Amino acid sequence: MTETAENIESVKVRNRRVHMANERTFLAWIRTSIGIMAFGFVVEKFALFIKQMSLVLGKPNIENALPPSHGYSAMVGIFLVGLGTLMGLLALFRYKKVEKQIDKDTYEPSSVLVMLLTFSIIAVGIFLVVYLIHSI
Image (cartoon, rainbow, N blue to C red; front, top):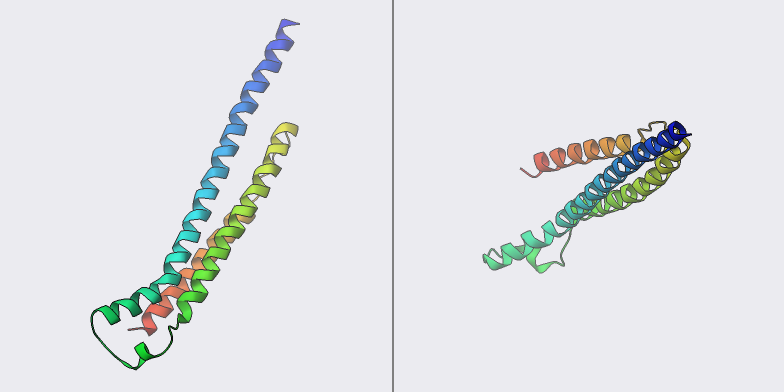
């Protein structure tokens, strides 16, 4: 009977460590999603900053008389904030799913969240490179 009690205690300790690892992974995804949202906010506000700097530096032109136009920076910024929000939500779903799989000892890896992040970052990177090339 003592061996069975020791085995049960050993499984509890092992599962505790696995649950904590799952929680650390979840928190890493949350940090990533917050970083993407912050970057999106900065990108969206960058056009406004450039317009204000041109006014402060006294470079009047026809664009300054027009209402502020955010162009592509607003679209990219909103996309990044939305992507970060979606990643946070998917991270929560993944965390809860893995938590149940750990308890049932039926863990199966899934790469949906990793693929979403990778393809989104590649798409944004390509868009920004093209945008910067055209702005030269």
